[in-house]
Amino acid sequence: MGTDNQTWASEFILLGLSSDWDAQVSLFVLFLVMYMVTVLGNCLIVLLIRLDNRLHTPMYFFLTNLSLVDVSYATSIVPQLLAHFLAEHKAITLQSCAAQLFFSLALGGIEFVLLAVMAYDRYVAVCDPLRYSAIMHGALCARLAITSWVSGSINSLMHTTITFQLPMCTNKFIDHISCEILAVIRLACVDTSSNEVTIMVSSIVLLMTPLCLVLLSYIRIISTILKIQSREGRRKAFHTCASHLTVVALCYGMAIFTYIQPHSSLSVLQEKLISLFYAILTPMLNPMIYSLRNKEVKGAWKKLLWKFSRLTSKLAT
Image (cartoon, rainbow, N blue to C red; front, side):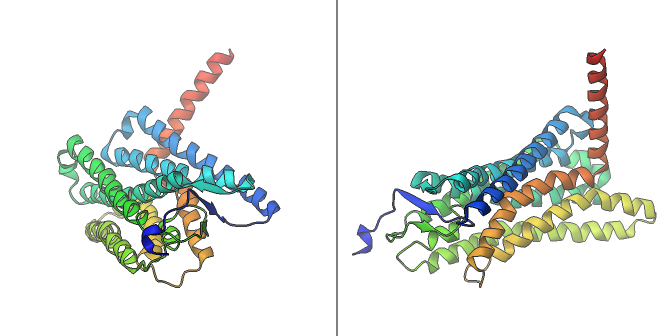
């Protein structure tokens, strides 16, 4: 059969994590709880920033975008994963698979660029605090956020289009938890080395370029912090960056490990675990990291809880 007659199946079967029913039920409960915590945590962060005027700053504007990206990324993968844990026929249609691949790639790319933008914001805050408000004005923040969303979406659209133009074999079993790009490409009946090179190149552009900007920003930040004479001043300057730096380490580390070398020796199980890390663990941890390591956010939480307790006591009386 020629490649011209090889077309995509109308649906695919996702093999998921386990075929054991008891294991699937246990994983369903675990991931459902984690997904609920993810949605609740990120939505509360967005709500808190909206309600507290002290958090209406560029840093928290970008944090709002990050929370929206995280909850959207988790939603693009986890609900389908949960449904398949309890389903006998673990099928996903061609259209749903393409949509899932597009949104997961887009939101992942958006997050990488957004983290670089947040690093630049921290660089200005620490290295040029007197001109911070003048530099990080509303129009610039909006343009930087839009750039993040547009660049990630364009990259994802390119990869999704190229991937679903490949001629497919009759195999419709995807050995993964979702329509992850490397897992889908493995179904092709042709040599996919050019696709893997494209993934590597776009990873360098959309992953390594922002990472270099993050590293340059933090080199300047650390250099400035070390010049601060006061120990308390150094500690305060470091704490303004600690949360963001923690999130950067989590997000960029696994991405570099996964996508820069498509021909790496990663097993299928390792690929699945890395996808779970991005789909569930990272979106769940990010609001916790910013809440626990940020005094302004903790102060806003206390203020909100105090107002809520007063309102509750008034209603009770």
